[in-house]
Image 1 (cartoon, rainbow, N blue to C red):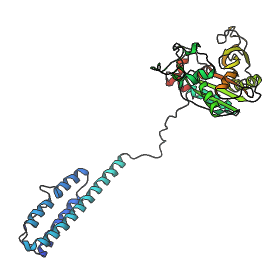
Image 2 (cartoon, helix red, strand yellow):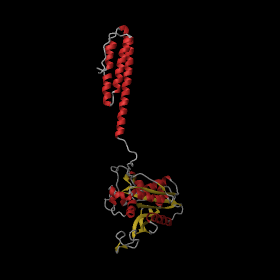
Image 3 (cartoon, rainbow, N blue to C red):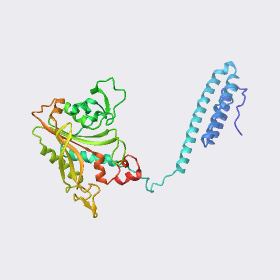
Image 4 (cartoon, rainbow, N blue to C red):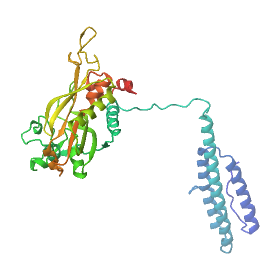
Length: 371
């Protein structure tokens, strides 16, 4: 039978002790019956509820009903009972939560002898992987890695690289300019860099010769996306400036790099070209990887090199003396070379991909091949 608070006629210490003992005995019994958080809420409300809780009732039936000369001792006893009830309610909650946790653990018990769930590991994207391989080749030659902003000024992207004001690359048909730049001076107008060469000028401004840097990064050009072009692609450029650097040093460096990337049997050849920031300039070809430089395979013309036996891969040249002036280098005392290559172009050759757009679609079935 549930405990009910009796009305007291006798408020002596003996009578209070007897009434309090019955209350605590009932409290103990009801505490043991709490098995869940639902039981605990009912238990708490029954004993500590503001309207009809046991503590509220003893406050009314015992303390308020006590004669004036007995109120002090009755009040002390009621306060003690309040503390004991609150302590029991807290204990009951801890036990109920502990029981729930134990039941949950029992239900979710893990068999530690079973093999674990292996998380699938990611892999480098083929473009990033190729770019890292290129950078690694030049790091092994003693080059340091430099990076710079993708949003550049006309000065660093063109002017400081000896591009004349009427050069086609300054046209919006070839370069992506930031909008609302008309009020600025031409050299201060912002654009998405078309090559990573601006980083070379920035590095030369900070560092006096000798300097040997390789510059990987993302670049942007106003090209329509197709099998061989993308408006966003990646480049790795290099720069070496010191005393007595010659074109032979450039040829030896790039020949070594191509052999490191494509195998020791690959051959290189250089033929004249033009770039505003180098003089003389050259394009670099490597012997066709698909026909071994023969121009023919499988009984017919090699479609990759168009039967020439060579594949054009990158541009290079000796740094134009005019460029040194923008970095406050003495062109009479130093010389150097620069080169630049498209990462996607090299990745296409290394992995035999025939459409550059496949690198950007994020198709896991395609990317899984390059783990």
